[in-house]
Amino acid sequence: MKNIKKNIKTAAFIKFSIIFLLLFKSSTFFGQNLTFQGAILVDTNTLTVPIGETWKIESIAYQTLDIGSTLNYSINATSLASYIVINGTNIVARYLTKGSSNGTWEIHLPMWLPAGTTIKAGASLLSDGSTIQNNGVKYISVLRFSN
Image 1 (cartoon, rainbow, N blue to C red):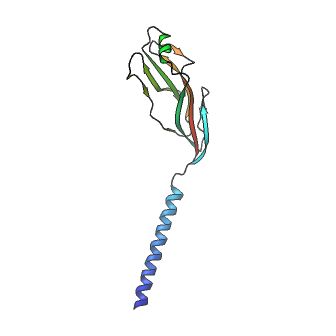
Image 2: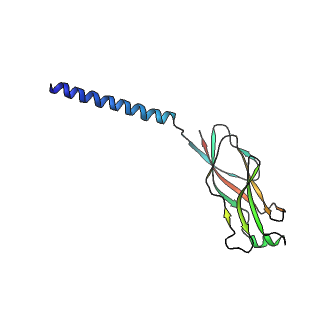
């Protein structure tokens, strides 16, 4: 009788172990695994996230922080917006206003980009409608992952 109970417990333990391993293996096998491929700097040249990759925007570097002289460039400008361009659409990365200590706003990162997405650094636009090419986003720091 003792051997039968022991055999039942052993069989239950083996059954539990097999089920656990199968569930663990299947979640690993069917889960999304990303493999780090390296870091790149995206500038004003348009890049496309390749098929089989996912990119993660980590940070943005701007060409200048001299908001006073930039806004003084235009007498009518009261704000400056610096952009990144994703799939041809300007996305505000940083927004600054003249004469306000609360006038700075920056995009919240990270941002994940799926395969097929296009990205590039953009210019800055003043509130009077003028564009300043040398005062926008200089680089977008991106981490590349393969799917």
